[in-house]
Amino acid sequence: MSQIYDVIIIGAGAAGLMCAIEAGKRQRRVLLLDHAPKLAEKIRISGGGRCNFTNLHAAPDRYISQNPHFCKSALSRYTQRDFIALVEKHGIKWHEKTLGQLFCDERAQGIIDMLRAECDAAGVVLKLETSIQSVSHMDGAYVLRTNAGEMRCAALVIASGGLSIPKIGATKFGYDIARQFNIPVVPTRPGLVPLTFSGDLLDFCKNLSGVSVDAIVSCGKTSFQEGLLFTHRGLSGPSILQISSYWEEGKPLMINLSPGEDALAFLKERKTSAAKQDIHRVLAEILPKNLAQGLCDLHSFTGRIADLPGATLERLANAVNRWQILPSGTEGYRTAEVTLGGVDTNALSSKTMEARTQPGLYFIGEAVDVTGHLGGFNFQWAWSSGYVAGQAV
Image 1 (spheres, rainbow, N blue to C red):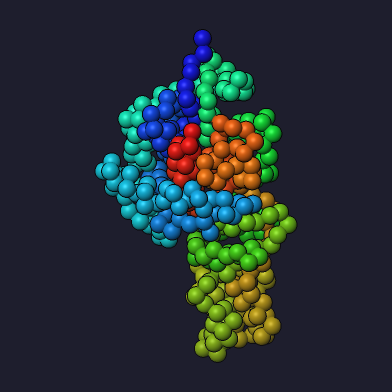
Image 2: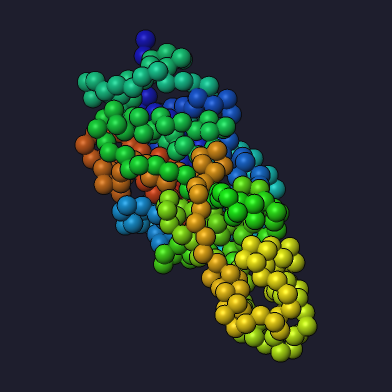
């Protein structure tokens, strides 16, 4: 005997939970499935365990997609203010960090408990550790064969996420379902991910592992000014994670390691006022000491600043304010916070997230080709896309 529901949602993460809540409020019979043994692991580990659940500045220009207009409808219908109101309704204390990022004062589990409570109140049936063996469509219904038996529904929502962080269960399930129903998928790649290097640059980064600076990192016309962290594999930190979503193999990056300082003007002034000082000591006035020494070693700058010709000072200033580097790659999906690409937005309704050519099939959250910047924007896309689908299923 089939278990029959109005709506089945595959994926009990942020988007799936929100969709289930909204559909349940509309008196739909809703089943929420996940293959994982625990609910919403990505929420639990996010924000250092405190869940960066949205951003005060969430807006369409903070998202990457082949169709930059697609996210506008969902983001306008369920905003960051709407989610903040839900958080406050449940008495969860929160605070703002830099750049509009909102975090729980206490553990991220509070957000999970809130969503679970909302699901329970809306009559949502939740089944974890449920693996999907096949999905088919016949006689106007979707038929799921699972390890918990056969299930049927009129509306099927895919909220299974992307490929990032496979250790908590990420799979390509959503993309496989899209292709099964002839829905195009934009090629995927890791986003919000540390960058790796090779050769001398890798050695340079290894020697500075743990050193951080405020930096402006640019790729083409796109720039971010936030923290940059040297690691034993290359570069990380918010500015690098942000630019990684825009970087493509073979593209150079431009880095300003001292955004508040005109390095050339500084060096020219010190050539007069600190003529006898070694160049690495002069540079350490505007950079961390280890980084100043490392840059001098990397570019073979040695001796007293007074003895260095103007052309050498220009090269050194460029190494500070216009350091051009070529990454060899990224750390991949293992450490990526999100997946770029996904189900092609041109194949979906921006108002409902329903597939245009496959009635009753919906895609939401990270499975879709909409990727936010770092800082709570991807959770807001999950809430917004889940909400609009929940209003339609």
